[in-house]
Length: 188
Image: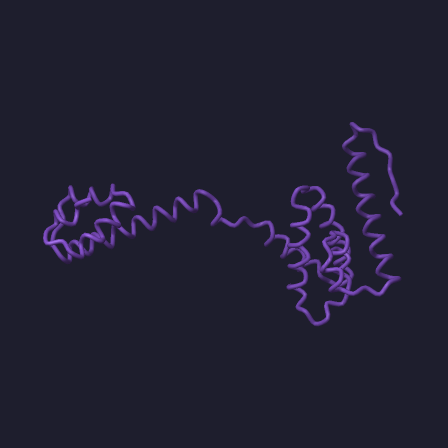
């Protein structure tokens, strides 16, 4: 049973109070359900229901590591509520409340922090930096090979190497294998 609190549409304080009541009542319902029913943890984990996932925090993990189960619950909860951040926050508040019954608060907090960390490898600046680093390594390697095979490299040729595109560097790296002179290396 949900309790409703009437709020005026323009009342932010009333809306926050309504949200807290709603969250507390849903958590209370889940606790009530847990007290009176035998709950199969795996069944709850397998459901595509945020309510079932939250309730799963109370069940017997049957020997599975707590961190593994908590990680799964948070990850799946995030996936199921991905389009609605406030809904995710609401379920997280319920999960935090219920986790106190099993002394899992710190584990929930740690997993939530890990979930919120950004995968930096997907960010454009990371890819650009990686590409620049790989290009610089290609320049360094080719410069070492040229110096070893042909001796000193002029400043103009060093600048040409540094300004080269990846495609040019790849071509020159192939050319060095058959080149009889430095000019043969720099043919593109």
